Image (cartoon, rainbow over all chains, first blue to last red; front, side, top):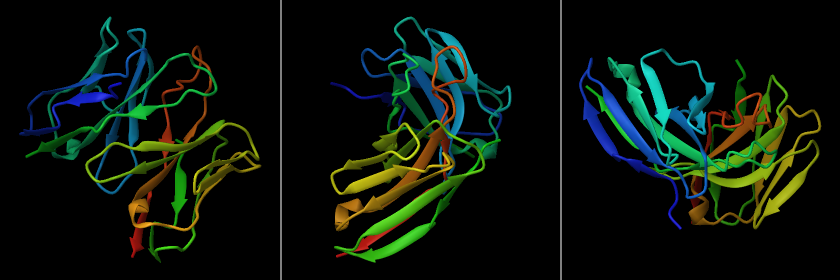
Length: 115
Length: 117
């Protein structure tokens, strides 16, 4: 079975541009979460989506937005890119039952470089 | 916001040695998880802990959920070269779909493990 897939794997943008990152969750998983990982740090929570609704948002500016589609895949959009947005963007999927045993499974990420 | 302090930041050990790392929080968590991340990859779940005092093993890995619910520990016994990587602890506050986001994990800064053959 396929795990969490993210595209593209690498991306180079310039300041001020816009970027869209994509994620396909594990088959059967209904929840997708997005994380930003800056080099040398642990991942930071950005968003969680479940059944196409936003269920949680981290401390990120409004330049960051996301959505989830009927097939449970998701997009993360970042507008007006800044140099500090350079990071590994991770997508994690989970069944979405909200049970105590909910486990998050991560994709390999999209490495975004902003020049 | 919640912060997790993970220590040590890095470890250099000889193959065969045991490893211990820990994570402490200023807040109480309902779930603790330990992940390993290799270069260029996403974190891979190693162990999940769900109640205070719980001790769980996964092969040579053993993790414990602290009694105070503010800390967790990971031990690796008889290390091997493939144990090399970055180990992250992560805590989750919520455990229900209607309330706090259960997709939100708070991660520590990571422990970089190097194993010399």
